[in-house]
Image (cartoon, rainbow, N blue to C red; front, side, top):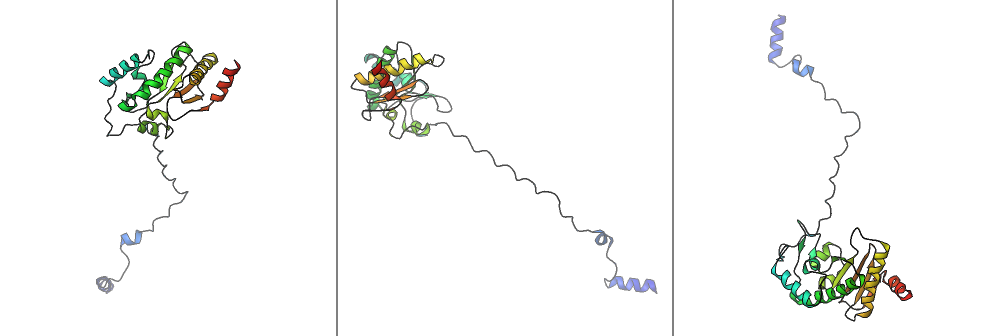
Length: 221
């Protein structure tokens, strides 16, 4: 009879749980500290200046360089070249020369003539770190919005790397000051740290940086 009733109850679904149900246990709650969040990716570095896709200026080389060099030579600029005055060292994927608009060539030649005078007074080779800058490049390197460089009317001059001494720095500063004082085409005169000076032919008569110190030293010399 017992077997009969057991079979009867089994048909009705009444009885002990199956072995799989009986052995099931609730999942344990994880213990310990919360996992550390994934580190945030580092921000991308500030990009180097890259010419816009619409820019059609030639890379290194071009007939315009030969033409500009001929005009510089004709103006008496013998120690500076079109390659130096139009070089953009921070462009990617590689440095390049950039042709200024033809209507600005007069500015570039005028400021190169000032640079030649400074070079003659200084008496040794000097390095042009910046002259012509197209606007997109000037913006990318943090230049002033109304920089004389974007008008091709400015040049930054430096004592050569490896030759920077207090005597050479002073000589470059005073040579730049003398040209600024004596040549009526000179407008802006700036003196920066790192043995670097600026002179330009646009944007009006002005001076900045350490220019006043240099002018006082020159006056008292």
